[in-house]
Image (cartoon, rainbow over all chains, first blue to last red; front, side):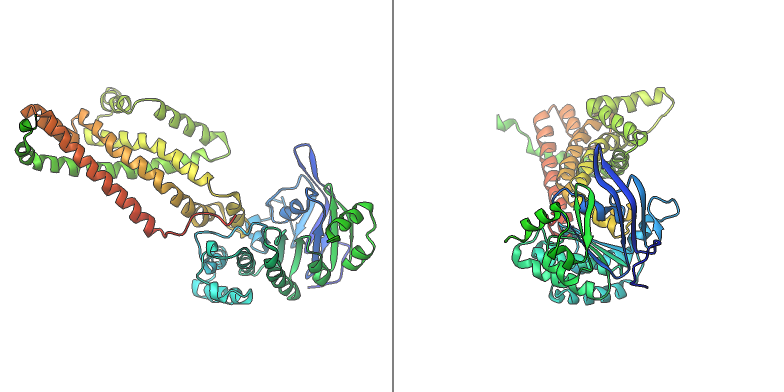
Length: 253
Length: 225
C-alpha cells in the first residue's frame, strides 16, 4: 500500500466526472476526487449539498448516472464487479445507527462476519468481544440496542463495521443524531480507527475531528466540490465565498 | 324457560362435541399452516418491483377479499367436480380456508415487512448481505414480531370461518351442534354448547400467541430511531 498521491487512478476511491440526478435535480455535479489508501477525507458543506449522496454512491446505496466510480480497483456498475462482495470491504456508519434491534450488541457485531464472511462463530464472537472492548463497551456485550444510549449505539455500529475487517470506512454524519455530551465518545473511537491507518471518508461538521485526523477537507455546495485542501489551509484561508460563509456559520459559536 | 334447557342432553352429546372440537382444531391448524404458506408466497410476489408477479398477486388478493367465503367454498365443492376435479370434502374445506385466509395473511405479512425502517435494509445491504440473507436475518425476524397480533386475529377468524365447512358436511364442531339441534330439536343447547367451545378455542389461541411471543424473545421490535 502506498500513501503517495497518484495521478493515474490507483486511489482506493476514485470519482471521475461523476454525475447523479434525483429527477431534475443534479445532486452530484462532475465530481472528480481520489482518496488514497490510509487517507482520511472529511466532507462538509451545507445541508442538501450532496455530501451524503456522495459517500452513499461508494457502496452502491445510491447509483450514479454517468462518470466513473472505481472503488478498490473495481468499477461500479461494471457487470464484472460483484457489488455484494465489494460491500464487505466497505464499512458504513449511519447517522441513525441502524443497529439490528432484535440482536444484542455482540450479535450485531458478529452477524455479517458469520453469515457473509463465513467466519466460524466462536472465532467471530471472540473478535466481536475484542472489538466491543476496543470501543469501550466490554460490559454491554449482551445489551440490546434499546438498552444503550445513542453514543453507545453508534460505537456498537462502528464495531459492527470493523468486524468485517473493511478496507474503507464511510461515516455519514455519525454524530449528528447524538446528544452533545455523547459526541466525543464517538469521535474518540473514530480517531482511533483513523490512527490505525483506515481509509476513511467522513461527512461531518465536527471541525475539531477534521483538524485532528483529516488529511484533506472537501467542501461541497449544490452537488459540486467547490473546494478541497488540507484542514489547515481550509480553516485558515477558505478560498471561496461559499466556504467562507459556511465556515463563519458553523465556527461562530 | 330455563327448565326446558337440557344439560343432560348436552352431556349425552359431549362425545360428539368432543370429536367435532378435535376436527375443528386440526383442520384449522392445517388450514392456517396452508394459509401461512400461501400468504408468504403472495406477499413475496406482491413486494416485487416488476409487475409480472405483483399484478397476479394483487388480483388474487382482491378477488378473494371481494367475494364471500361461502361462495368460494361452494365453487370449490360444487364447481370443481364439474370441471373434473373431485376432492374429498375435508380436502376441499382445508383448501378453501387456506386459499381464503392466505390472501388476508399476505397483506398482514406485507404490512409487517414494510413497517421495518428503511435503515435496517440499508444496514444489511452495506454489510454485504444478499437479499435472502437480509430477509432471513434482519427483516423477517423483526417483521414477524410485528405481525403476531394481526396473525392471531386472522387465526381466530379462520377458526370461526371453519364453521362454514358444516355446510359441506364436514363433521366439525358446528356440525355437532346442528346434529343436536335437528336430532332432538334442541337448537338452544346445541348452539350455546358450540359457542362455549369456540370461546375455549379463542382463549387457547390467545395463550398460544403469548407463548410464541415469549419464545421469540420479548425484545421490542423498534428500531433505534
